[in-house]
Image (cartoon, rainbow, N blue to C red; front, side, top):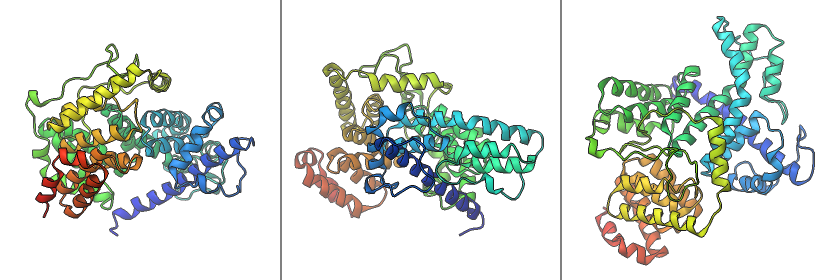
Length: 445
């Protein structure tokens, strides 16, 4: 392990432990409610049982969903809200992730403001972390640590707050990712820049800021250089990051990948709040466009949605009556996207499917169609993630198997491509024949 990556790895390990503890709190909260116990869990809880293992996010989310009405009005800590947002995120429910993580941000804001005020006064954090500043048990988290910090001298107060706020960086970053996945890259960029202001070497934010700046550069040399600096820094401080292979591959070719495109190649603008899309509830905020070939670009400069806007959006999607007319509109949009996919019109496919995603975040067909569009646009990482999500929902989803096979072939993995195409032929021979999978297999070496 390189010296540069060692501190980042240690920080990730600490955050992982904190996150696992928070997920455990969430599981215990669900258990307490289901057993009609007090909401506050005991310090040394019994085993949560196989259905609520922290690693089994689907089972935990199912338990949370069953108790949604009971959980709704219960007070939740910063740690529980952060874990809940991560749970929604990991299960592809990005609108709910944005809202839960927003609530977590609101709880961490006072402590963040206190820490920033100390820094502006020139206070430097103490080297040692006081014992009362460590998370302990299910009910000793950020709120209690911030209270304890106020009784300390300024250097130890700042050290205390900074240690407790490490999870807040993850909350901001994951909320940024969630914004991107619902189509708002400008909000994603703002949140990731906010993370870098506090932690300049935070790997996830180095990747996202670099990617978005590069994709929005449209060949501008200054913007290209700015984006490349973020990516170069990522490779320096976190060479073992999951994002690093993509950056290593793309950075030498960045000038070509992100060169200016003719106006005709740009995607059409998406409707704003005043416009009504078929298949979306009234008042749905605009879903931002992306440049072809760019993993997370967004045209225009929209401000981050307010808390009220995001709350209204979440409630609008959840409360929209699922009428036959609405479902037909969503089906028609998917059919439109699939027709564009088969014709190789990937941006058109993306623009159609992304309008369905908020209403069907856990539909395998929708995820497969979006994954196919991302593959065609060269957005390989998102394509892989989205196709994987589709196959988690339905391991025999034909479009997902087909697009995954195509993606694996593009990535130089003929063995994986053969397996995916063979699985497709077994799952849906008619789809495989219509999409000439036999020919695709013949191309593999």
